[in-house]
Image 1 (cartoon, rainbow, N blue to C red):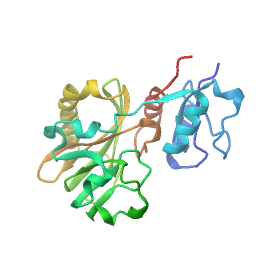
Image 2: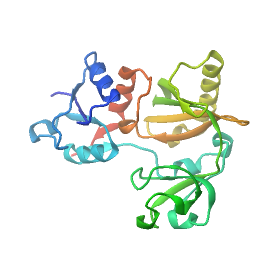
Image 3: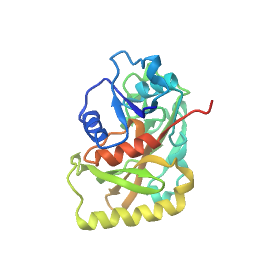
Length: 245
């Protein structure tokens, strides 16, 4: 039996790096074809998937995979001492009168997350289902944002991706590395039982508040930035599992 990771047919830097990383692993990465259809003869061998969230969900259904991710309301349940900002979870209709707010759809599909002067300013607001689940937070200024691929409560690889309002995947300074790991130890002591064993966690520095949790994302659809692709591949594979027959 092969251990195949189904890769989205969309060629990206991340998917290309994972393809290269697989050459030194026990996994075979296969894009199959552009129709998002895994041939029947390969489905039993597919142990994981990586790509856009919709693609991953379609392949998971075909290949009998469980895609692990945090509960939709997870972030709103984290203590404010770790988020350093007030976060609320509910339905879109609950927040239509809110002003100057960050809002994100919990299913990642309905609209692009962002800061809006008014919730009704979301592009295509009129066509959105008012019952969709979202979480909101007060607006803060992030000085640094860092992506971490985590397996069994251990950071396997990490990369910055945002610094001072622009994309930046350069290495962290020594002080930033120490700050990240110290904050992570505090976070994992409190939250280790609330996250899947394979997950992507984003942390950052809020201006005037220090290190904080940004959010959690499924490993099977998260960007790598400058993370080690071989280590990220390990986390991605473990974020998927076969359903029991």
